[in-house]
Length: 228
Figure (cartoon, rainbow, N blue to C red):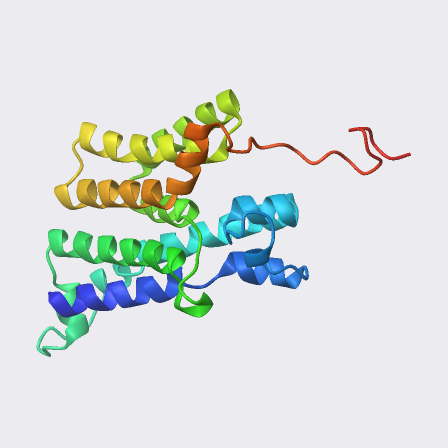
């Protein structure tokens, strides 16, 4: 089963490495690595380019995580000739545990690819959207609990980063609490740790009181009033 897991990981990494934040911002004439926080994630794109672009980046990043986690299912239901000893048939005949391992490897690799993209000199985002998309496929209830945690934290504090950090704790906690298969518990924990590590600069700013709260841009016309 090593080869199918490696294939899932390679495909997952390449999917995750697609730099949607950079590409969408570039369409708007912005080098996102040189604007705002310099991060190509949806939050920085939204701040620099606008809500539409930022929301599009979040959706695209989530989709690549979902695809990385879900595509091994194509081979789980693959119908071929069982008399042939092909790699794809062995993937179709694998056990549920190995199948979960393939999905997990694909998702973890996608988040790593997003964070350290081969297409952008191993620079990338913090993995929240990509991890969320994949975890929504693998464990809907924990990711919904994580999303609720993010919303409550964000609206209570105004900090996107703090919401992401608390959400990264809530998802694995929920996965362990509801008794998911061990592979999925491990994947939720690893992704939670990775997201928190990727937020280490935000954590330093939160502790020093220098982290920026989210602020909506005022409408054109200044002073927060609509233009005539």
